[in-house]
Length: 115
Ligand code: HEC
Image (cartoon, rainbow, N blue to C red; front, side, top):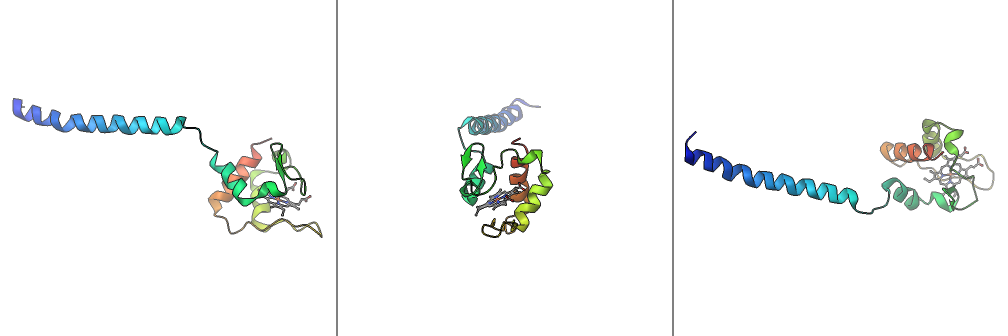
C-alpha cells in the first residue's frame, strides 16, 4: 500500500473509531442514569396498586401481590390479567386483555419474580 493510500485509510478509520467510542460511552452512560424500572412504570400507569399492594406499596381492596409467585406460575398470572378476575360479587379486577402479549409477559414475569 502506498503512503497516500495508507493516509486515506487512516483518515477514514479514525472518525469511525471516534464515533464508535462515543456511541459506546453514551450506552454506558444510559445504563448508569437513574431511571425507573419500565415494568414498574407500566404497573403504576395501569393502576394495579389502586387495589393491590405490591412490595409494601398500594391498596388493600384486593390481595397483596408481593408473594403471588409462590402460588401462581408466571403463565397463570398472565392468564389472570388477560381474563380479568370476577370471582368477587362486588369488586372485580379490570380486564387487561387489551395489553400487548409482551407487556402481559413482562408484568407477570415481574410479579412472579417478586417472591
Ligand atoms: C379495581 C381493582 C383492581 C385493579 C386495578 C387490579 N386488580 Fe388485580 N385483582 C382485583 C381483585 C378484586 C382480584 C381478586 C382477588 C381475590 O380473588 O381475592 C384480583 C386478582 C388479581 C390476581 C390474582 C391474585 C390471586 O391471588 O389469585 C393477580 C395476579 C392480579 N390481580 C394482578 C393485577 C395486576 C398486575 C393489575 C394491574 C395491571 C391488577 N391486578 C389491577 C382487583 C384489581
